[in-house]
Length: 272
Image (cartoon, rainbow, N blue to C red; front, side):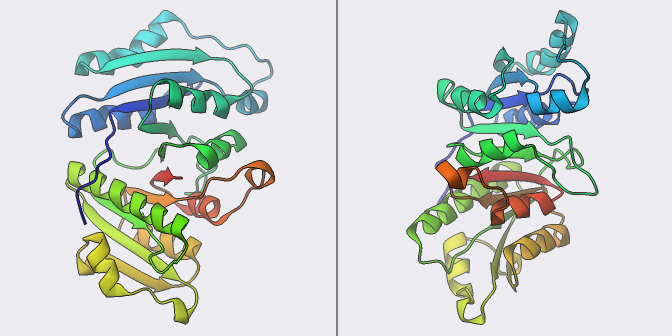
């Protein structure tokens, strides 16, 4: 396949000041290294109100200048251009969406601190962001290594739905970019539930530019197949797609993409 025309120049890093470790920021700084500099980082510093209500007896929280200086020191040391804003809002995901437009973001990176038993446990606000973000969102798992050795793309190449076909192209394009920049192995997983829907393996090879041994075609539901292959190959990043929803559908939880994300225990890049 052709070289990706995407880039990660403007990155929004979501910072939770109540946490002591900022995995998302570590990923962004590493991206600046592998992309040979030129990455601009915008820090969106905020606490989700749902989390604050759950974890604290009061709504009071403060960080001093020393905390901020320590936070930005790695970027200063690396010579990375950065900006920051502090948000106090009960419309957390809308604030992040507004920032993506204001700063022309190519990527949003946020940490998942709520992982339990190897599963991703995102809040309602984070799910809302994933459903409607116009730029990719990367969910960082605390236990995933900074160096990317294996990238897994989850596609559905047997579809005749033009929206899914467009999504496949985006998934493959971003996966190519990551695998090239990180010098990582690129893998493709394509599940199918009905034997009549078996994907054309030759087409997969031709359209994805992936080595034959890195093509994984398995029968079963996408939730089980994607997490199974990700574990088998020890994937560092899984790139998946989801179709944006609005209105009543946007308020619903539990679509296929969300269930897949919940089962993975590595970094996940979600594309709409």
